[in-house]
Length: 63
Image (tube, rainbow, N blue to C red; front, side, top):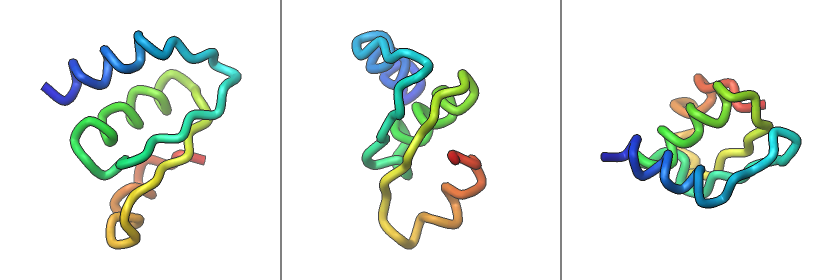
């Protein structure tokens, strides 16, 4: 469910590869999945989440 929601959001926004994307709530199911998709596709991504999730999110190498 989270993957389909992330893909729907990505299709609605239609970002360019040159865009810098801010994912608010990146530690949640949809935000994390969306982050993975964006990073895989080569987007520059900044992730926003509670500080206690920063180690978990740093494994995505979003920078």
